[in-house]
Picture 1 (cartoon, rainbow, N blue to C red):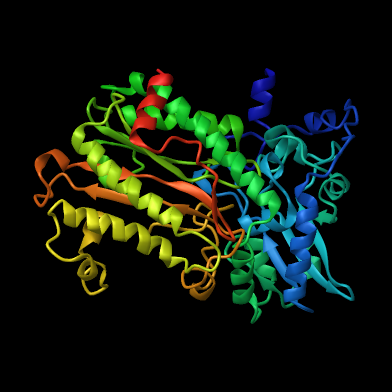
Picture 2 (tube, rainbow, N blue to C red):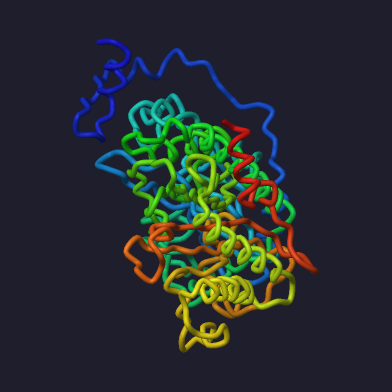
Length: 480
């Protein structure tokens, strides 16, 4: 039997594998050189995590807190999707990228100083056990080397224990926990009245980004810009190709895996009238000359901070007059939305500013036969037929970040310095919309940038990615 056959036949947990012999099991215990890790350093994020945990501790005095990383998500049978931990777990531990493990848990154990943080992991399996070569879920020969508990403690600056010891600490004890992500946590942690409060807190805590987070967001945007460059370079090869949208998607995904952890969300590579389908991610259409490509994509770094950028590109490098006229309407709407961003302004003012421009443009085109005041009245809102979605959302570790924040903390609040959000107006003329002349039908346009709120305005993290149609045509020409 060759080495590959041995590897495939020693894991009894899988239906098609054959258990090893006792002689083989004894043989596997011998002949190994120790491999301790040296030179372990703490990432910059560790100090920020200490400050974040201190704020969490202060908000939940004398309350035990449990934040799981979450289990792996099954893709099919015994294969899983690429693992990505719960954002709250990463936010408070600093565990990032390839170091993230399924079924890890952060426990904030109350003590006289507030809370003692304890990280529970599945550590490196020693060569004295059979797990390192038999356990397809955690074994080193299956999934790679993991930290020992001591190594992880040195890396993250907190006490680390084995997950198998978690029930001993938690069983039968009340704790505010994030439920539904880890079966072990759900089975041993008693319900607590403050669990809902915890869910809200760990989401709303990310509304204001610290310096580390803003720097990560800029890095994610810069990587995404390079991904858009890759797309423009392969665009000629995608034209008239079966499933040409997949060529676009794969080019961007390649950049995401080179520079980050993954794409921050399913890439929208929508050509032609597919751009009128707001969450088009089947990406199985053709790329046809003379049409537009709406590319909504973002790279997620190993730190899990993601960009969220949209550009609408003329497939052959030049806008038609009809395309340009609609594009300029969206362009001006986005300018108005970005101009509305500053501390102390209602979050919904961004939406209001962009929609007013779009509505006036539709009035000027003769599509809507009402005054701007009438159109913007919530009793009418007829312009939303062509622009269904909101113009802005919070952005960070999740592409729609802080989703468990209350309305009074998010949608109905005033903008604060350090909030990171998108500005993304769009206009979508369905191919069967007879209210528009034929040359406009089937055109979908969205322009999206990522901004950070300041006292007197905002910093546009994606300002360097071309916006104006003249800039876009020059950009595309330079990469071809």
